[in-house]
Image 1 (cartoon, one colour):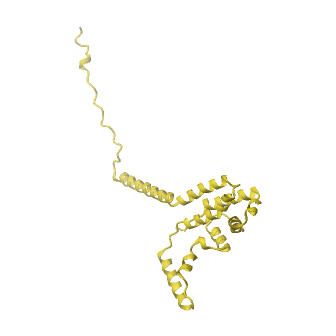
Image 2: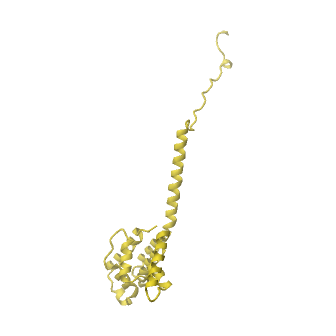
Image 3: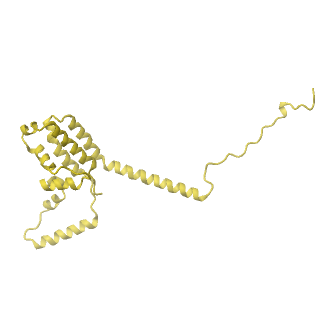
Length: 194
């Protein structure tokens, strides 16, 4: 054998370089990472809060879909006004503390000048959508919807709630479907003062 020929036992592995770290090397990158994490947490918390706040809306849309499948049933038509009232009552509203105090002060000054003091029930019913009449109910529906509603929408809802069964059976199918579409539009697009 030739002594100049290297053997395999003489070979050595080359030393590998130190692996490059994926961690940021300067404080600016750490600050940017912290800012991004804060933004992600805040956006996620806000979305979760909105999702929980809109639970009543999702439940109403599911119920509205069930009612629309049975649109030929009179009980489904009669439940539409009730469903909209329940949605209106369920709308989360957070009045500001200052506005509440001003309203209390105004009601006290009004009660001093009048002969009969306002009852607690009348003051509670003023902000209650369930106690609104025709024009006030129509104004409430229109005020809380981003899209225009028919001018006689509250009258149509009153017809569904109080008309005899024969009048409801006489409604054309197109008008029934339009009522369901209008109700769905209001439930989907009404805005909440919160």
